[in-house]
Length: 183
Ligand SMILES: [Cu+2]
Image 1 (cartoon, rainbow, N blue to C red):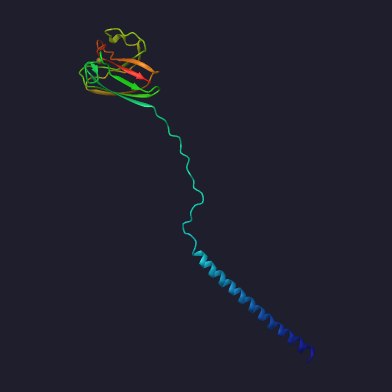
Image 2: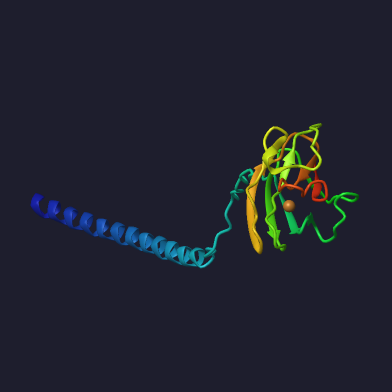
């Protein structure tokens, strides 16, 4: 056996040896791949399709706007407020909160014109009251409500206290009156 034969034999045996190593490595790699695939499949089947959120967002409620509205409904007849002609001795009382926005609904079921006016506190009301005297003693007054008509007006409640309300049509006060109580 010459030198070249020895050299080629050792190369061939080395090549066979490398082939075995490669086969062994590829077998191990294949087993690892199959194991990973199986594990991956079994794990993926355990994934919850609807995961529970870890944090709950609680919305902060916005502050609600505050309203201070009062409604007064007044039925008007000739010539008194309410259902009975007893305003002089038993005037109707309408009560509203202080600082309220008052919605005043007036319905005239009479045949004459009437109105609804708040007299200033402690003002002296002439008896009988004449329409031309409108002005000085009045804190707030509406226009006329004519027969078979309705009107709605709004005003801000005056400061706390009790006020006399009159109809300013000549001769209707004192038989046509009421009280506005603000508290
Ligand atoms: Cu009147």
